[in-house]
Image 1 (cartoon, rainbow, N blue to C red):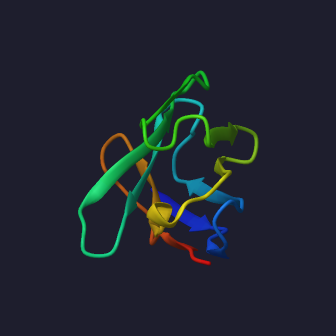
Image 2 (image 1 turned 90 degrees about the vertical axis):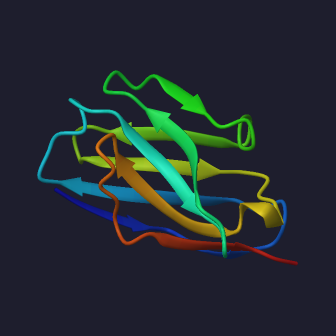
Length: 111
């Protein structure tokens, strides 16, 4: 199992980013996938989940601003982030239901 996140960067408040998570070693059409984040000095926070049928759930903090999706053909999971806020600053990881994570991608929201 390997997960590789990409797409992070620095944006101003109100900006947008799209994160990608390339999965290998398993089929994402058979398993749910999660996005989690870790802000500086804090623990991991669950952000969003997409199940094998593409049903989605979101943390209250991001509901209405973030959208999780996936492409089963290319084994990629996405996190579209809109109207970003400084409190969204964190390292973002995709994570399997079993807790396997990639190396993460940094998202910084700053004026």
